[in-house]
Image (tube, rainbow over the protein chains, first blue to last red):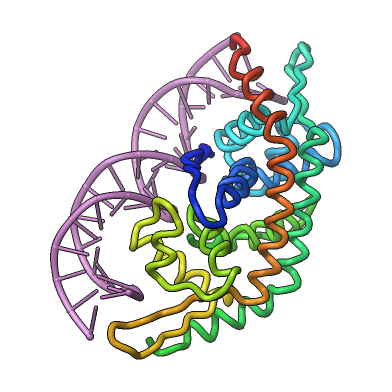
Length: 127
Length: 127
DNA sequence: CTGGATCCCTTTGGATACTG
DNA sequence: CAGTATCCAAAGGGATCCAG
């Protein structure tokens, strides 16, 4: 969840690796993507997220939400009612990011079989 | 470096989050991106990678290379000379993945300032 | 030159109980 | 409802030494 901005000028290929890491840093952690997915469709409440994202704990959901909010990817709205009501929704910036992630999804689907095959070959290599 | 295939059917938004994680899983870890960058430009030797990727240790470089090779993103060629010579080069599949990552790079550059601002605001919020 | 093996510290993340 | 606090286990990753 922390950022690796140990991005020294690097070298060949330069700061590009650094910049990619910068983007990936926003969605690092097991749950960021899921939160992004849910909040991209419209405002969602904490409990809804907790139910929608299978396996997430309260703690991790909170941490993930805070990080995304801090980076300006999420807007948190508190309704001072009782009981409390808090809604999270993705910003435009986050939606753009999500679009790029969809590109990755497409790649993963297209190559899922190939990767599985590569692994089988690699693992069966009597090394 | 391990894969999170605890991708239960999930739910709303479905297996999509899972599929993205599948893609991100290939480039997880601090060094995969750097390796991908270098090997995309052509065959590279172990020592060249070690020098090109600032800060990587021998151990982590080896682990990263093994994982990428296992997933079919890298081809490892051993020349049985003495001293040994080993070359790594990205596969077409890896190049495609890298193209998608460039999309993320573009996003990161475009929003770098906005994110920094969002953080400053968030952090200065006397909470 | 190209790694493998080991040790150890740091970070991540899960479980659970408590609170305004 | 929407978190916070605490404790603890597992994974990631660095340092170092050894070997073909």
